Amino acid sequence: MTARTTLPTHITCSAVVVDRQGRVLHIRHRATDGLMLAPGGHVEPSDRTLLAAALREVSEGAGIAPGALCLARQTLGSPIDIDVHDIAASPSKGEPAHQHYDFRYAFYLAGEEPPKVTLQDEEVSGARWLALPEVTSSTLRAKLLAAQLDGQPEPVNASVLIHDGAGRYLLHLRDHKPDIWQPGAFALLGGGRTHADESIEGTLLRELSEEVPDLLLEDLKPYAVEAATSVEGLSVPIRVFAGRWRGNPDRLRLHEGVLLRWFTPDILDRLRLSPATRDLIKRHAAENPPSDEPA
Image (cartoon, rainbow, N blue to C red; front, side):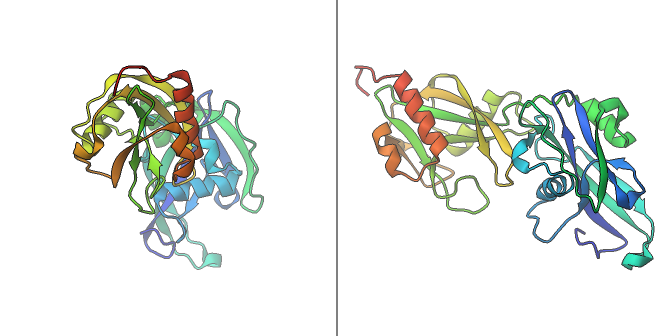
């Protein structure tokens, strides 16, 4: 269904980019007689997912890199709209009349200011940011308004700094799988938000119950908001919590990953660990010196 040669229907993908003012990026496609549409196009064999195809299209058509975008909390990684439309025959391309099933994914700008739009001249002749009531597709416009997409990014991932109050931090050795974040590296426990999560703290508690059901934290509270990069190259705002625990990780049931271990900050440089996580732990350790109470 994704190959362009699949007829009489095949899948295409579009990127609905919403800025901080709630406006949606439209580009003028030469192939559609100058219609103003969201950046989009056909799926390529190199696209690992439909969402990745939408990101590639906005990068190629408007010059906006995936790192300048983040998922909208209201839709996460699900399409906000699937539009079915007829495509006229194109004898010059050897294509008969057919239909497109266009999967449309919503993204917010990760930064305050809109990135520079660099058009692909051979396919695109102009670009505009249109307010939601001016979105050219009536079905997309209705769904954007119903979802109340306001362009304001929120954390869509939650993780937790688990410490024992005596200077040690609990780290999770992740599975070595290519389709997950930081495969084969030490990381914080946590994960991505789902549509069923009522809050970002609910996301964390659900993830902990799935990964380590016996782990019960004390004094859980928000600590920071950090940014990471997803497998697709998107910017991911992460709500980091801090919580205390003083147990033996070998006695915990671990349903995901390889193991859990305590580490002190002076050991972190010797571990396979993201620089952002290393800096985060060291910052927390500097702000929270060990107490004299035994672990």
